[in-house]
Image (cartoon, rainbow, N blue to C red; front, side, top):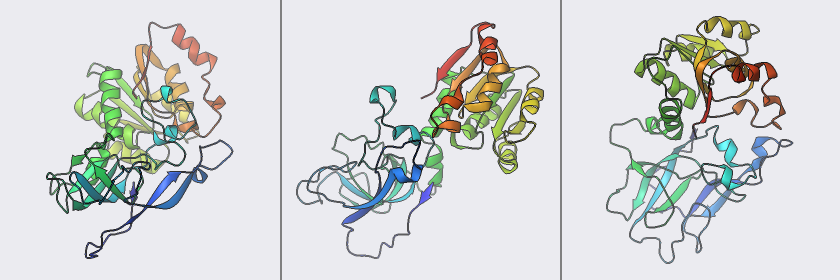
Length: 316
């Protein structure tokens, strides 16, 4: 989550320029991820359409438009896959092109409105991207995904209940077909945005007997157990991670919700139960690599082909 500068509404002049993080160049394994982005300034009311800002032909004070100041915007692992130079046919959402504002869910405050459903001071969640100000035109074809945040509600909750929570909910319940009859569910990146929601659904809603969360530090493991209610939290950086994983899964793994790939995927495949399911949601362990490190071992594959049907599912 990114918090932008505080904005003082006592300024009588409507801002004319916005700062935006754009995709400067496609990410490459030889470059740091930060070099892919560039902070620029653009006019809020351009004469022609630009990335994520619709054309406002004529004066900007026209019906249906809303000017918002971004207060929070999201920075999610899934965004890493949107900035590769890949075919859009392989993605579940439109890719970010060079020169585009980085796509993201954000929460903004209405500072000027010419739409009857919104007034100055309203907080709104939407697909605004990494931009300081955004001019929303509800009559444009752009899907802004606007949700007005009710008064006396914590705005940050609406970021937590965005795309990552939807991936967790539908990934576990629809794609993974999880039920209370499952004995063991393992979740990687269990302290992160999607994994933390998966862990809570598995334990607090389904009441699964053994919910195991994998995280990358003892502090994160504490959060996984105390805040997300996992029965067991494993630190994948522990020198004894492999043996600890095996000890934690005496009845094997009914569902493995994979957010990382890497060793956690390898161990889960080795311990997968008959008719177990693997929900493939992410692979953050090697997003910046060439991918060779993510090859599953022959031992894990032999466990798969030697067992009754195992379903690999994509939650996005």
